[in-house]
Length: 312
Image (cartoon, rainbow, N blue to C red; front, side):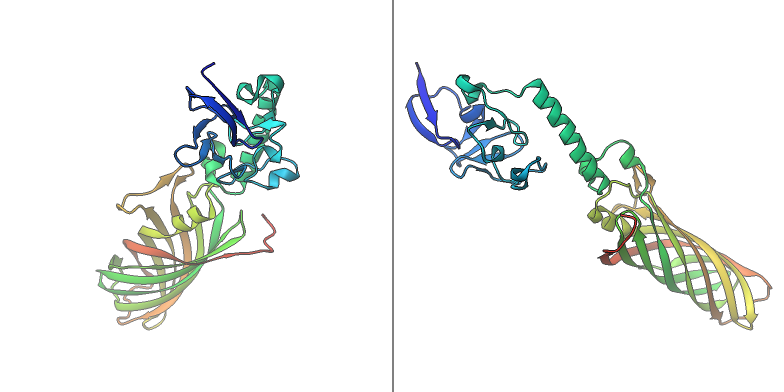
């Protein structure tokens, strides 16, 4: 016999003799106890001196003991082992724990349990546990906006705007407030006004954020750079005072200025609005309007979960 090692119930060495030819020790797991005191259990590290895992289980097993997410084998090392770091399995009697392997029934039960847990986490919005259909469905996010804009032009000119959106994630009942501004001027082509000021309000629809996105991913997706395109049309109700309505399209960009497309499709916001304002020059036409395009920056100002939201 080259070596003989006996263990206490939780994995501490009780007796050893000779030279151990392998680093696979207690329950057949790779040992780093000589280096930093832990055993590697594939999904997690285990500390035999404490009889507990070094990190919480990402899967909560059944039973009362399952709520202790640092517990090793449901706090019953005489009966169970755990070769994966997730799954307690029956002990193996006289063959010793190093010979233990999960039975086909245990593996099948665990696979079903793991699938159910991952599905619940996916539906709850954790994209780490989602794939296929869940990632391909856009998340329902809608809201309203108010804003002001300033245009300086003679048929062709520049525009600036500032807009506040209040958006609701219908899946989780979370309210996001965002602020969008033009860090640089945009371009305006349309009815000559000399200079004009407008106040407007309207509705916003957000597309392209996957159903499986986490709240943090939703917040990140709602902020950032955008390419904006808008069209307005209306008329004067009094000299230099007019009313108009319009539509807008805002395409989300990454940090390099490239359009973002997710598994749920291109990310963008579609807006409708009505507004009113005044201009320096009276319009020579009954109907007036124009098109605008440029780049803007959106910042998420606040994130507020709504406890009473009925659609969770």
